Image (cartoon, rainbow over all chains, first blue to last red; front, side, top):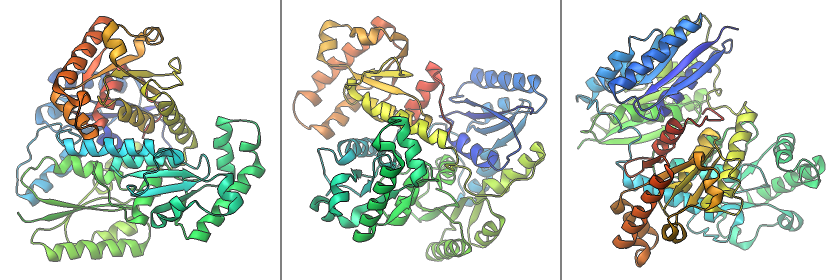
Length: 274
Length: 274
């Protein structure tokens, strides 16, 4: 199938152009895309370089490139605009109606979108990350009084990456505690968790998926056997029901989705906004 | 100042609506915004509930709400559209030109944008996160042959959150190694790092900023003293120059920006796309 190049252009990291672009292109299945991100376009030279790269892609393929861009400065935008392709730019589309509504002229200053001007937000994210690391996997700290949420689930159900994502993205204090034989055999949770019951949130996962993930780590042995995986998930489900712990099945979800669903269903407030 | 409510509406996590919205509203300084995210609008009831919340905000404030939305399904979009406010939707703005260019009809299926359909990407991100955790702070693993990049810098220069972000967001294998008295006194790096010299990347930071960050952890003592902080940064800078290690000053940057700049300047390929 003919290949088409998608460019994500930005005077910053490119994260906005990428997330917007992905939301749109995933609406189309019958395409063969190559993706190129060109971040930090903050000089005229870099803007011209981007044009050269886009035009090269246009020349080497029968299909026109698509350009998702978030360039704040008019001069760079007008240079990039000359490149051969379909241009989709959120500032082109939305800045004018927004400016009219707000009755204020845009600053056209780059670098505010993900800017670090906000030291406070940076610190909060770092502190939350340190909290997640110290309270990972039932770790030594067990500072559960400070936690906003405590994730519980079997090994490899997604607890650690979800906690780290909650910390980095939202500044949320997320601890996690692994359910193991100790809990399965007694059918109960330790007091330190029961005392924080309203903060508990369970992660469940389909047995086949869990096996697949565990096999990456240890291909052989009990840990990734069908029997063991089914046993652990059955027992952890019993514990969720026994204590009335809300939970989400992570099988079909990305880390972002798991994190968002936890915030949405617990009502935990994010401490920072991206 | 009069408050205006910004709504981020999504049938998924809301991340796309939020990043787009933030890029736009940070262009305006003279506003007082309250931000509300309404994710997972995937039923008619939820769409109607969103309309009620938006209309309440419209009634309680003199300023009209602004609604950034990424709703893929036409029926939900047409319900939400009735809410009182300025509507800015990337699907409204871009889906038609994109569909024309690609000569394909959009699927209008939600949930693909951040969908977990891609197990492979999920695994890569998890594996990269585990790698970052095992190789954090010069940790026991020291699997530097496997690393894509090894961050070096003084304590609290931002190494750990940057490594975790690189792992979670891009699936990049990022290790980090702290520069301490051992390195400062000898002026050299250990062989295990010198052997991987082309993977090294330095984080520097302004002394005042570093003091501020360290004081959060330990308000008193040598660790956060002006003298010690200046000494460590001077010595780490010498090491960067001695070994020709590229580096970035993180003082003004967010974690996203530091991560993007590292990828941009090292040419390290991301293993997954968001």
